[in-house]
Image (cartoon, rainbow over all chains, first blue to last red; front, side, top):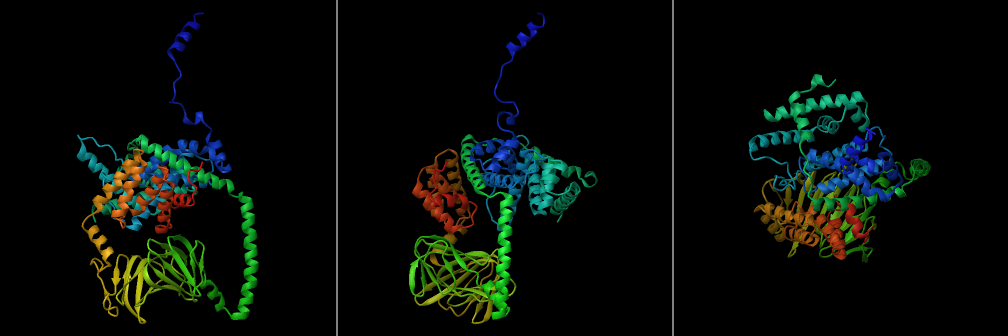
Amino acid sequence: MSVSQPIRAVATRLRVIDGGADPNAAGPSDEELVEAVQRGDTTIASLLYDRLLGAVDHALYRVFGRREHDHDDLVQAAFEQIVLTLSRRSYARACSLQTWASTIATHVAFNALRARRRERRVFDRDPSNASESEPVSAADLERAAGARADLERVRSSLVQMKPERAETVFLHDVLGHDLAEIALLTRVSVSAAQSRLVRGRRELRHRLLREVSP
Amino acid sequence: MTGRDSDPDLVRTLRELGRAAVPVPEASRAEYQRERVTRAIRRALSRVETARSPSRRALVWLSAAGLLLAVGGAGALAAHRLFGSTAAVEAKATSAVAARSVYGTVTIESAGVPRHALVGDVFRGGEVVTTGLESRLSVAIESGSAALGASGELEFVPPTASERRVRLGAGTVEVDLPVKLDAGRHLVVETPDVDVVVVGTAFSVGVERSSGTVATEVSVRRGTVWIMQRGKQRAVLTAGQTWRTPLATAATTTVAPVDEPVARPARVAAETTRAQEGTLAEENRLFQVGLSARNAGDALAAADAFGLLLGRFPRSVLAEQALAERFRALERAGRTSGAVAAARRYLAAYPRGFARVDAERIAQGSLGER
């Protein structure tokens, strides 16, 4: 008697609302999605997009620092690559599907950056031309501009590095994946991933120092 | 573990890169992207459906490899007996040139018989191709491609063990060989007054005829190109350099300095002058207008803006992107014939472009799928 009263009181205060729950809980699991891709089930296209867009979009944004005019092309290329790798059973299910997707998107983004460098396109990529840029408050504009310039230098140096080192540094230090995960994603041993990370950081530091004092 | 070599400042900067806020895209843009990418995913998934299982694929490959080995071994033995070892080299050299895309009026004349060119046509040597106004032919040649522009004339010479040769009688041919040819082999683009010799590069050659005289212009985008005239090397061009024989006296040649503009045909010269006057801002503005219209869901206005950009600045660095956006916008607007025409134009100009999959789908008339 005395117990039922508080329960009823709590029940009247709580209500079910949308959102906040694990997004996977509402739809098929990662495992089911992967199997559907391997069957070539076209009906899961939207589900796959919704599940992985966040990981893909964030990875691309972090590599470029903004959404550029060809952002949609890169998102499309990343998803095509994801479907291809899943269908070829390259995904070992050792990490989450989102982590896998962010790795592929990172790879696509670095390839695009390198291609641009190769083409030597003198292209007006100033912030006004970008579709969206990082918000900067008016109060500390100068400091933010300095910080952004630092980040741009890091991005620029990463692109000039050996691809496997740059991607390992990016996956570990920027996207926050751990070494074991990176080793699985890039199909190397943990010690090889660690070596790439150490050498990558060292190379990046040297490049940044060289840029400051040529 | 990684601490020994880690630089705290560097790691902090990198972490900052990862923590930077990612703004939410505009709703209209997100909707456009969702529609477009899910369609691309469906296409990719439909290709998976038709793919063979790995074991079966492996079996097919093994069977094919075995068959090739058997046939190749027997063939090589017979050829070696009949013609000696050079026959194998000749066979390698005679890899066929095939039409990859045909846009507009393209005619092939072989043994005096003219016919319209079709995708997949093979050029073994002896064929003369002519393109009409607003027409273009792209062919797979060696490891790369060659594209003959409008009002052009190109003859394919039968290849030899060491040389693949084409004769450019008129118009412009753009060649891209991403992979170097085998040692001892080269490609020659022959014009009425010079031979352009390459082993792996990207360049274009144009021939201009005017009242009985001929001029050749060569522009190099990547790698190195040799200009030969009457058996002698006249110039060596590297990326970014342009060379031309003067129109009036085709026999005398000069090498233009890299940063010094050279005389060009009137239309090209006018466009270049405009570009040099600083049209990039205007090009960017028009492109941005198109993007804004696209993101606002106004596909027709977007198509118009991209069309305007292409019309005013056909050689813009944004041309490929604008053309891709234009055929997509026309498709979204339901302008089927316009979308197909724009997609074909894209494929003709950029046979290996980033949007070729979409362009091929639209050009093949599969609009409104699923």
